[in-house]
Image (cartoon, rainbow, N blue to C red; front, side, top):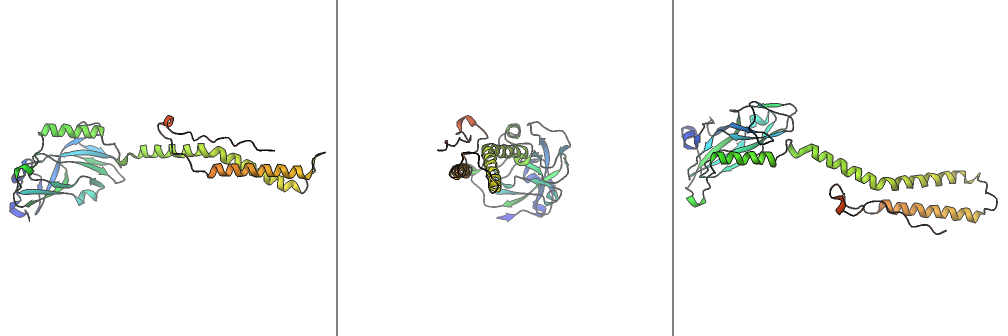
Length: 262
């Protein structure tokens, strides 16, 4: 396998449309179409906000012979500006269409994207011919672009990893946990405070008429049992999180402790 470089790197040998920007041993692909999150062709320039993504289609339409393979990488000059092309890889022999990739703005400021901007770099390698049955030609150009529009509208969020949705789910999870455990903790704290106050006042406590020391000790023992029951309930394994389809999940409502034997 030999890298095609210099004068042999003629765009007409590899593209049926477009020329790209030729370098010594590679060609930069340029943006031909910009597809927004609704699957529509976007206006030029398209302003890509921090954390946002957009689909772009190359202006160059490949027409690779059976003895040439393309190797696509991102442009380092673009990453230095906070823009990263997520799709890189191999262009197989026989491919007869453009390339599409997702651009991500991982910077802190907005970035304008124009048609004609360079966004990917491709190197070409000459090798032994690939048999026709192993080559995969592209669908017609219009069909290819429509497929990318549908994918942009239905599969990709506006922002990378959809941070708003992740934050909302995390908030629901925390609130569910607070609801299931909060009541038990409040009751436990209230009993602990009551016992602490009782112990603090025990030295100066004056028994009501007819109440013996044994009866006071019995009440203390009952309080200890209630604290132990609440502690077991708090420490018990929690039921699975119920953020969705709550009707199908077991209830996480705190069960009432069985009445104490007095």
